[in-house]
Image (cartoon, rainbow, N blue to C red; front, side, top):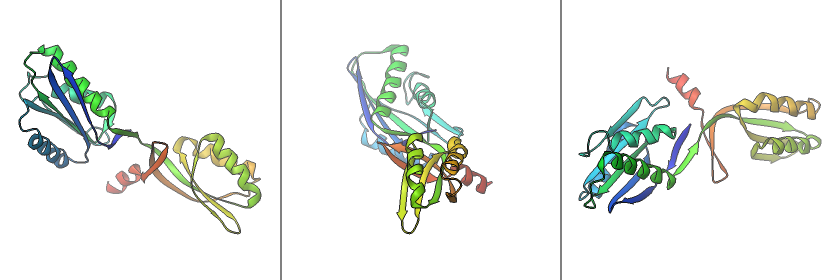
Length: 223
């Protein structure tokens, strides 16, 4: 699932009207409303401050507003962009400074949609997926084979310790865990051990891993 890791601001101009899209990650409706209040205060002199926000793994929370624009020309198109991009837990406010030329219904829909797209482009969006922090314990004879297998699979080693044995911690996508363990076991003739398997959710930002507590486990514990 896609999330806004770091919000941003994008701007487009359509027939001299300025559309400024500000994007921010949110977890709750309270955070979204607080963000909206900030934007209304910042852009108090604007013609409109339209908004849309979504939250929840299944988009349980969805809200939008045209803020005085013709019905259905701003808030809903903005919300549709968030949903269409698969973005979770995010809010966007598009501020319009009227340029003196009416855009018409279709023009407004296109402008507000484009503004949100530009705001997302200026934000850091990550895609989270389920995985496992896999602990691997081996001797020095087996470490080269394991590193080769991990590299071949594109699996990142996030921690390593070299003492009288070698202990690695690898970030493995959920779908590849079983096959990878079997390959390591075969390559080391069963000598490699897996002392820990910690479910996590992870993403990559600029090539670096971001690791989060497993969201499925948290949901189960809360039930």
